[in-house]
Length: 235
Image 1 (cartoon, rainbow, N blue to C red):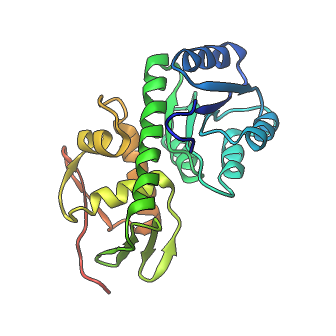
Image 2: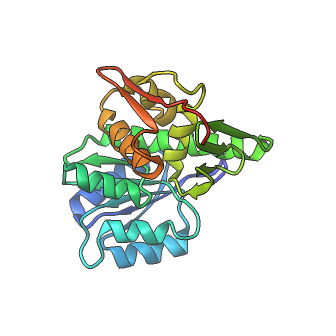
Image 3: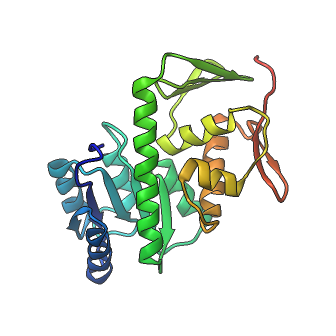
């Protein structure tokens, strides 16, 4: 990520010229340095050349879809991705998050909301990088799950589990302290940095991702309230 005194570099990969221009213009007025690509191949080429701080990525792209673009972007080092989708299905959302996207917005979306999401993701990544740079090696054990805060690694029953950056932040928050019930509103504010409740489905999608990787019993749903990390006992 760039230092806070530099203009943040954002790459918008969107095949609809009208949407791409509107997103780029709005982000530009907010002080970001924005580049635009209209297909997946050009998007990957610009990503390699520019190494942006964040990518706004359309799911449905000609030639190479957004899922494959996201997979390739994340091969070397995680880069924040905000996915744009005209689809509102649970499967599409979960798949997008599973390949490394940090959040998604469904078309049609408010430019103001998109900018708020971009800024929140960048703040969260700044905080995570600062914490990783200053923290001492410390492992937290919750039942059969081990979390290395400094290295941002997770093990379930001794086997390392690959989490996205957002999944790790969510798991760490639920683990402090384990067993505490967190509302969706708390998670949105403290993990994502969102002050509105419009992203509640984002929380649910990431919880499903964690359960898929750590086991369905790892996170408990508290009806009409939120979620809690199961304390359990080490195996």
